[in-house]
Image (cartoon, rainbow, N blue to C red; front, side):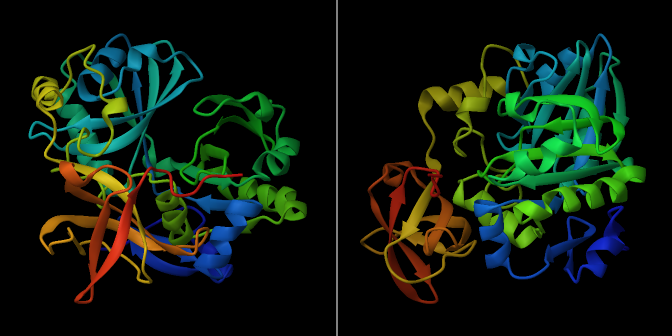
Length: 363
């Protein structure tokens, strides 16, 4: 199958990025080194091209009803300019995808979904669109840049009259940005170091990228690949679809009870409500290695007796903490912070401790 390309594919190649297949796209995994790019975002500012993500518009009188029925969070609480993290539950107790819901105006929303699930999510939405909401898939014509790090606001403010400092987390505004009208700028991101995400038409992607790079130069801006994006999100304990959540993981098992609101009916809500009342048999936890070793997805998690109690879903050597960290599902009895567990790394059982997330806490 031919790989899709983001609008700035040639720019990333020219910058010397190592390009890899990811979610059906040819994507930059790194430009220099994962370590350097990770620290750039934590200490200065970096720009990610995440234009592979999917965007759907949901409009009309039936829009909110559809979103309420297919998502776990309560979208009725959204007002124009607000963003909400949510998920699409499936009928089997798992998750179709996790997503962001943007309230653009009364009866007008944008859903931002994972690149690997664009077609699956589009089909799911259409299948449930019994009320006749207007659905428009703008994924192919939309570019998305994530400008993240403590210097992001200073770098971007000269490019727009939008008041970035007055934009709380999980809100957005639409206005002129880098000379381009009707650009959506949101105070969101998946790094834990603050910053903004910028949605714009592909035709203006090159112009806006160049202007961001120029404006960010005094602040140490660098392009950042998917490698550092993964270590940054993992240090925050943020779930990655396909690793930590999937079609078989319940939002309650995954620690997403806070986005699962039983004040309304949604896909499989009755069964999930029962699960909440009865308690889950396993939970997604964060753990830090107490011995030298890097945990990886699918490594076994053991108790002191050497019995299997779970499995690692994501793991890495944390660049910020200088130790191995990971996420994984364990039997609920072992899910409390402070409990000692063991990670099976190449036939050795290495000590680790369950910790409260996030791993990384900014100063």
